[in-house]
Image (tube, rainbow, N blue to C red; front, side, top):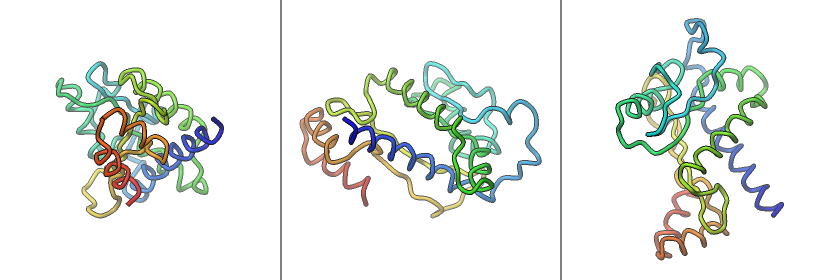
Length: 178
């Protein structure tokens, strides 16, 4: 169990670090004012969207689009956007992620687990996540999309059993590690 928790923690940390790499040097935070500065993570799904705005400055391009689609009632899987402020903080503070952000990410993953009825790192019904970059302007090639975060040597077996398709499970794992 400790090894699985270690893998989960490592995956979560890598997820945060990949988000943060995208936003460095692309946002002028002097133009961002008000209560937005206190919010670090914005949830989106078909049940509730926390964001009452779709600011690319705060959410990045993809985050703003996901918030907007969710508000329109389009079928958007549950997820969250880490504010561009977190990346600014990350690079200004020796590449350290604030504890508050890690706590909020854990909370958001728990919410996604509840909605999806899957669990991140679970050996029978694993939750898989996608990590997508999204600065306020298009930056092709800046960061690759990471698909199937949560797969490892153990959870790929669970995916195989759940889907009854070993080829699909192995191909999903390959997409993660390539």
